[in-house]
Image 1 (cartoon, rainbow, N blue to C red):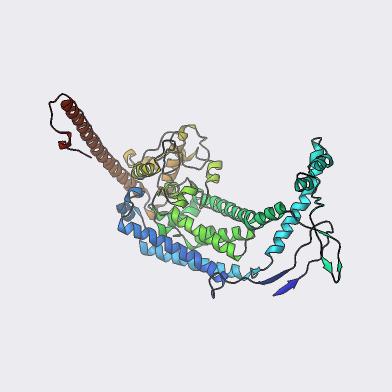
Image 2: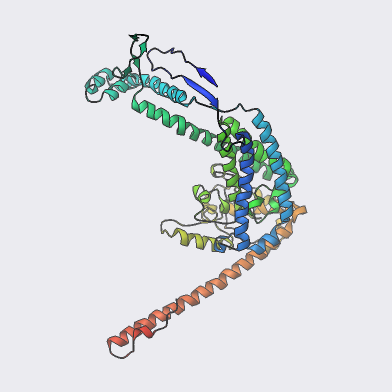
Length: 496
């Protein structure tokens, strides 16, 4: 505990308050916050993962599934046990790095908050000194304006005069006599300072951390796909999950897991200047977002999937053989994909997405919003700059050995066609994890999905015709009653 008295070196500014600092109490005593920072992300990972696993095994919300349970078993090239094992290994590394990171961090103290808010209020007061000069640049006389406002709006007059609030003073006593009056802050300065300290600065810190981790992961992730050795040596392990599920989110090569996830988040935390508790929420939030992106469901009411377009549907494209060299952005936003032209441009090309898209559209139920699972428009394929995929089709030399019918789904002509060619070539390069057989198997699944859609479409058509016949029958009976030629309307059959 420490008592600190601040000297007032700015005689024309309100004085800063004294403060007393104490060690910040733990969020969940007796567990220290630094230990909770290691525990919370792991607990969040398995908690949310097991929720989605429970939904999977109970077959809840099948209408929102991006893939069928059969695809999970048939298309993935790794067992669930291997996935759990490698995730635990990554989390052990993550915990060790987090423990070392915590050792470099000072303990957090409380008791200085009022002082820090006052410091921000001083900065606001100092910034007001630029107001008279700014007004003079546009030909306005600050003194004249302030004189007009003095009686009706004295606080506004003080701001116009560069923070000279002559009516805002407080008198203190020194022994038995009164000391000279001291300036004090206006209500608006204190309110704004409070908002800046408690909300704006933390929001900026989180924004910086998100920008750093998104940037780190995008460029490193993209490099692992563009470099054949890096892909086949490290990153291809994660892509053994062609049908992602929640607890496979951190299924990686241990080195990649450290480099891409653990180190990237640690750098973001340091650059943003977060304290321990801010880091606790940032790491936990990042973990929840990563799990949700791999959950395998396009849930229209999931807040994590509604906040940004970088969600399960968007990331699922990246796990498919035709989109594996697109949609590199993770875990929060997609701006790097969009700025650098690596976003998938083929729309909801796979028939597998149709059921989830239809269900989501019914849930949204807005004529002004067109639901897509992949957050892309197939029309963009023909209009967008083909870079950086302009050579991918030419370089896909092994693709000609695959029958055309085994290259389903068929992307629209243009950029999406180039993206799919480059992606499929990368899958074929990874022979130890399936190679060409992955494309053949996925094409078979696609044909099955199309067949199911056709059968479903015929059932809907038959149902619609039956309903139309019922409506026609109702019309005939109403007409009959009006002419005295039919019985009661209540006796009709309804096909609903």
